[in-house]
Image (cartoon, rainbow, N blue to C red; front, side, top):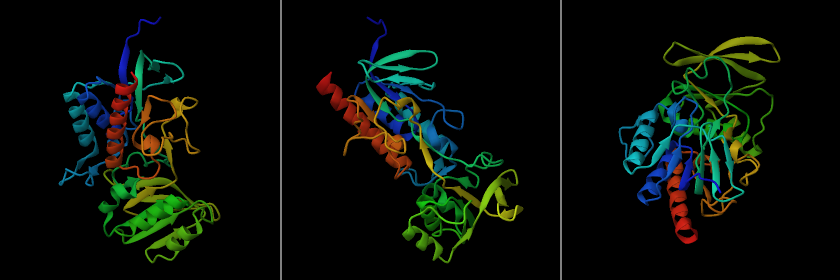
Length: 315
């Protein structure tokens, strides 16, 4: 028999969902361990670590920086003695009990697990893109569109998500240019019609963004390459919204939890319970529709409440 102590709850992932789950679980005396992981920005906290101003989270009327918000979430969780470990979980085994959670340096056993590993935007991978993320470059119109009032914006993509982003951005922008690498859209017919008939939306076909240009502090435009003419041109714009998809961080759950066709964790209707009893999910890892900080926090709360109730009844 293993000498490894069994924890009541392990939370995998941070961000609004993970930290909120930790707050609720710690207050319920579950003594959770939270493996924060490492965000794209190189520190725990998830996608908000790449966000500058957050103005749509209730309770912060003046807004605040994404990293500042995550620091406050973390501080609140630690106030109730949630234990934080800034490591990535690289392996899980949910086929036996207690569950096995492993990092590069340690193995932990747990009676219950909450998965909050989030999702990340699929980026273009071109020069300047990372440099100007949060400074003109974004992957979330709902989050950042407000900052582009009367500005000219580029949206990259050809699916429904890209058309939805473009249409939403017309509320703020003076002009939205959709750049697509093909000569036809993948979006549904109704979304195509709405976008093409909108007076603020223009299209550039057979073209890819090859570089994001800027002045060192904000983006000022992009370098476009047309496949038909083989011409490269500079295109002035105040913002670039990348809408070519999101990828859930669920690699460690493959073969362990039921995932949908896009790779998101499947939860039972009206709960955060996954396909494995005792494993719950919150935040963007199980949400490909809303993907907002406030909804992630809400489902993190739900996961902690579902988990506490399950532990009380089953363990």
